[in-house]
Length: 584
Image (cartoon, rainbow, N blue to C red; front, top):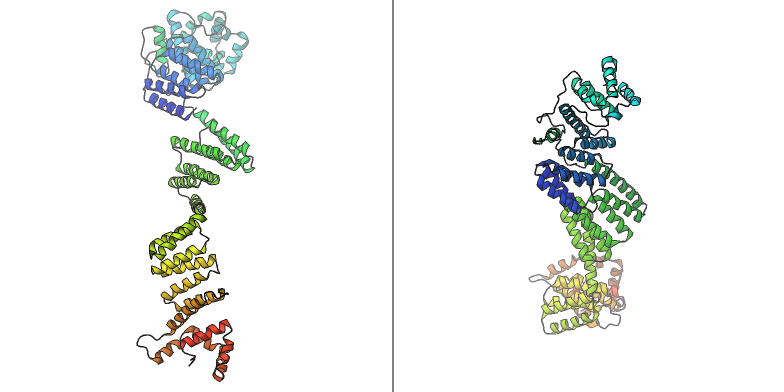
């Protein structure tokens, strides 16, 4: 059945339990209309509802439809028997109960119902002195009767009574006398039940057998909670007094059976999935779902479709799992798994926005590290793709020109914005970072300027302008050591000496600023401070430099030859700037 049909069936059962039979009939009718294929259970349930409100004509029609759909289901015949009993057709009810017992000999409702019908037939026979036609002539067939009675522990003791055996022989010759014999000997009822092949529980053989069934007799159906009202016709009265009130078939046995078959199909599907036989796995998961509605089967089906590469079907199956799961009030963890798999499918399809949406929805249902990790990865991937999609060299050049115009107009904030746009449009162009660093320096944002210069140098290690701008920002930050180191690196890259003058000028300023006397500091204090400078101390302790300095004392002109070595030159300039070496 469809999910909606199942819902109406459940409502019908609830209405029946509450004895609201009209509402139950309406609900079962809706379920029948919505069911994609004829369902015998629904007709059985509606038959029971009609019988409960004593509409036996419709009850019989539904019972017959039930039997037509599933002739091997015993419950359909008990429904038919109940309806016929209610109409007063006791012989027809008797035959229907017998059909039920042929299919299911242990059916308690059929046994108790047949017993009630037999009692009603006895009561009628006792009233008019006739014997009901229940196949009595065939029942007293000499070839089988004695063997049945001797083989049954309830009747075998009766054969030791010669007078009783004589009664049986008389009945063989004249079955029409059975009503009289049953009225005088309660053991005869036991004999009849054994000969009919119905091993029902009989009253104590020594107790008297009532000649009629009172309308106040106990109900034979263990599930019944009410009696039929007495009606004027004697046959209908007898039937109504013992007719059981039907209970809609709960379908538990069928559900258990289908669940077992569904789990077996799922197990086969799992095996095929592990073997990467995805088409076979999909077939088994679909079969499991058709047998029993469990969202787990749909999630497994979606997994197989995903691995097969049928991503659109995977998404559709997961959406169905979510919809069905909501209706069934499935575990939120199962729903979360469906959302997560949709997110993975969309990620593989390249729809990162949808992927992020469904990963977030999965986390809303149930937060797991796995889905969270996938979300972070796809967010990072989307950010990178967004950056790549924004790249446009022409737009970058336009933004650079705008930035230059703002810079010349001393509009530093807008210059920063324009250069930032250039960076987004051309993230590998070092000029954007260097230009923005120049604008940031004007805004006194020196640390940010240094970072931009570092990126520019990383993009283009020969970009002299980036070194100079970094040194300028470091000088402003009074980090003279790093400023000088940056200028030294710039000198090494400036092979054509195009920026020599600018680099040397800034280096001189940095060296002077590094060792200049502080306000109020005496010459002795300055020399003591300089002598504690780690770099100066390191140079003075260097044996090579000690040798060079020793030569310089004897011949100051010798320093000119040593100055040709860039490293020696740098160290000598540092000693000169500190005042250790004096040129005058």
